[in-house]
Image (cartoon, rainbow, N blue to C red):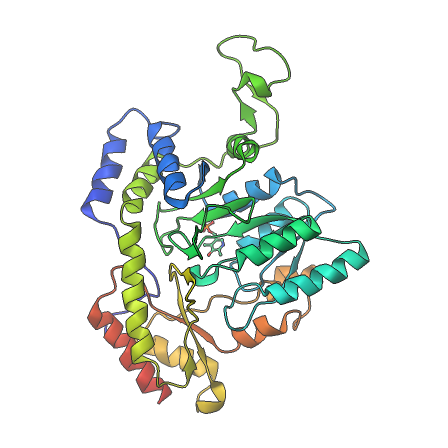
Length: 387
Ligand SMILES: *Cc1c(COP(=O)(O)O)cnc(C)c1O
């Protein structure tokens, strides 16, 4: 049987033509296509300020810096995420801690967050920034998190790497209705791709300006932001310590072309998920949560094994599926269990719900170009292995 990956990009002729046009144009970087991509992204997600960068990792880094995260500060995120959600705080010299997940939604638990905030307030050690992650594209309860942010005085960065095209109630993810900044990823396994790439979106014009500067060396050409009058048409000032996190024109052209297919991408994922929901309902597994009042972008389809009803171990199920050429994966190892985080003092068991999830989770393939026969191969393999 041919191998079925867990995720894969979908590139069509229009995407290829858009990239070729840029290659024949005057600008390969810092040209008009990045601006056009930013405008289109901002309009799509309902945010007036959008700053495209070369990865979501870079976006998370400058989002933390724009919110003033530095040495002595504390940043909290979810343990069930990619390591970048936590590393961004460490890049800024801050400390990081993890808020355990809700076992049903798999997102940061609002109850655990509230309890942890109460204790942190008593101890005089509140976080400066909290980074909820919309795992699989299922939006976190942002109105509850936003209310806690007001009550306890922290800022919120949504790690929406999985969630472009998702909705939280009536709010588009990225409109930042209850957050300061949201971050998207355009890595090839995500909903839309630019090869490598990401962006920050915000409602706040000052944050938008800060993010723009941090993307490009901390340099401004806006006289209003300079320390004194311009010295001439060549003049610019470096007023922050920024980076070269710029996106190329080729990447932006691909992104702009992909963005035109966002609704197709999300609705196809829903069709695939509906079919899985129906075909897998009788197996000894828990299917992913969907919610009546939000729209997941369904970046991932994660099943959880009911190990007491299955003769095989988690690892055996995983290996048996891989042997049948099913590209199962595991999103994610609790971040604090990584050796690097253990050297920072984190102990196994720090977040019990995250560990219980990790012991039985399997991501099964879901991607735009997935054919019916590929999905059938996955369903047959699962029935074979689990029954
Ligand atoms: C993919 C991902 C990132 C990092 O994205 P890059 O664009 O590869 O840097 C960060 N957070 C989450 C939740 C992700 O899935």
